[in-house]
Amino acid sequence: MSFTGERKGRLVVFEGIDGTGKSTHIGHLRKYLEGKGLEVVQSFEPTRGRWGRMLRDSAVTGRLSAEEEVALFLKDRREHVKTLIAPALARGAWVLLDRYYLSMMAYQGARGIDPQDIRAANEEFAPVPDAVVWLDIPVSVALERIGNRGERDAFETEEGLAACRSVFASVHAPWMLRVEADAGEEEVAARVRRSLAARFPDVIEA
Image 1 (cartoon, rainbow, N blue to C red):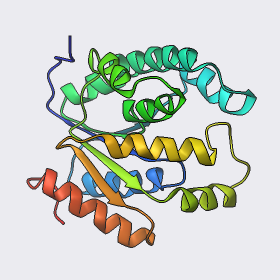
Image 2: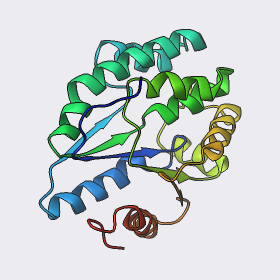
Image 3: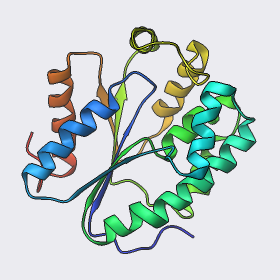
């Protein structure tokens, strides 16, 4: 059974492998939307709730099994949808997320779990995004950016990131917006705006 809650708002997700600048561009979009007088709720996954903290800790202490990761992500997301995402959409807010279930398809899919099984399990309870901004960069660029900010965690291997990028590339849906993100910040922000303007012409101007 898919998510059937009333949705007056919009759910926009920023996705991509590590080092693409997701939080930076979420910030740009939030400022733009709030400038139009809209309510914006910004969040991220995994959350800082009980299940999300376990996942975050594992990135440093050593990854759990793929099956354990899937179970924790589903628990974390169910709680996130119930307590934050669904209520915000019902009252008409724009919800901006840094990662959602496409990241789960990519990162746990790279470990051998069927991405389509992951998608189906999530869409039984989680609202499908109105738009996913996939910030796409070459793995070599991602690794350089990650290296510049400090030590990599257990999710950030070259082989793993390449596999994740392949999963993102395999998703074809009207709401999947690929944006090349290996340019300067202002240029990428303009590309993001153009992509979203095509999706939400009544709200966003290119």
